[in-house]
Image (cartoon, rainbow over all chains, first blue to last red; front, side):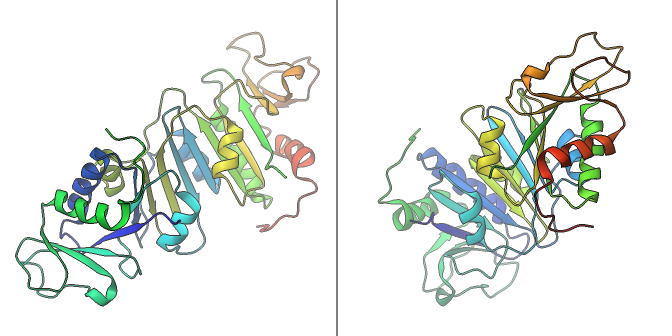
Length: 172
Length: 172
């Protein structure tokens, strides 16, 4: 069965990464193996200038892997804008749940971060697979509305919907 | 067929990365798709503090992928010290040749970088699958000895031994 994907969506600076950090911590604390995918349309900056891996890549390697006994990093040229499903199917294993950030137009279940001072309308509706909202105000909507800091409540929702029948491997 | 692996080996500060850069450039110029693998026993430092991907990983994600339409980076916890063959089989695709650095004890063909001021003996012998030496002096040995800057000659050797029957995909 495919690893489930839940997307954290919202306007820029709504606090997506902060919420995501809290949900990751909460799910990991409960023993789940969490992967994340971040889509940056305009590129990203990952390695440090002058490091060997940086030098390999700059010299023209299309793929560079650097690894130790504890961690591995792969940097790879790609030739199209992959979907989250492509990334899941090609790069992610040994994971119970994938949380994503960025790339708004995706078919996966979404949790939208909403701040009242940013804009009145939500980006998504229930028909867009909006699962819940995390907001700094109470919204009268047809999906669950969590407090923006309620990582426990959101983790409960994710667990109930996507993880309840999976055995945990490493409860901590 | 497995993607061939050639290891650039040598003492610390012998100039492995510099030679590797030149060989990568030369092979890429000839139209080959090159991947590199760097093994660091003591860990490595790849992402930038404060970046979203760094925050995801720090919050406990065991795998984090960040990607744009042109490049992808994956950072992943691993639970053992993989061999180069493990890395090749699990992470590298669409590649004609893999060049590696670090991890001296490996069974793959090796090119040893040698500088006369560093130490008298070579680390490897022909029986260890030593393919050639790149040195700043002439050595009287039973494998080809290239000048330490002769990336073209070394690329010819690699091409003849590992790539000659492969079709090039994107000559540039």
